[in-house]
Image (cartoon, rainbow, N blue to C red; front, side):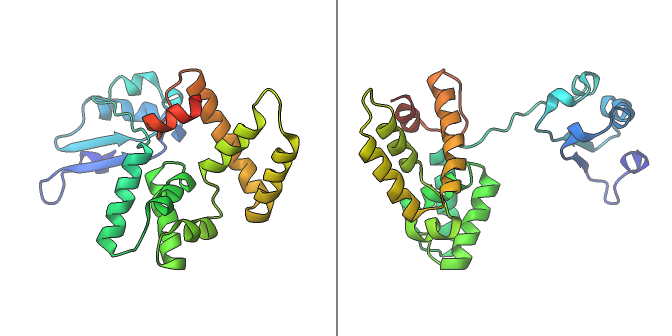
Length: 208
């Protein structure tokens, strides 16, 4: 508190960022009420949280701005990664970048970390390089999985054959983990619930 009240050395703004602020104790949040309501001059207080429901309503009501941060669409994230590759002189292709986005679950920080892993290991961000380094499973495999599983009459031999081919190519635990996330997204889309990170074409695919 004392540090917040003290003026900055150069007379400029001072910014205090509380990350994962829902983890603050009730006493700590209560102690910030007065400071948030009447902050000292040139002091900016930022609360970052993934669970605002766990924060004191009295503290939230004193915040002047509430900014909801959502995941970018695949197109937006791909554009970002392509710009990074261009700026760094890294060779890449669209399929490789798409797979990096999927591996990062459309979260920019995770996608950039995945991109860095591929670049450090392979240099170029191609589909094969990304799949090998990230052990990632593209959404096309999940769409194919459900195309074979959902008809009224399932071609069991074709279905089992497809699973056998997958097992030879990728780690099945990785496939199952991704399938759970994919299925959740599909259920949300089917029931008209907005899903961060999906563009209009992907939404059409999920509905189909």
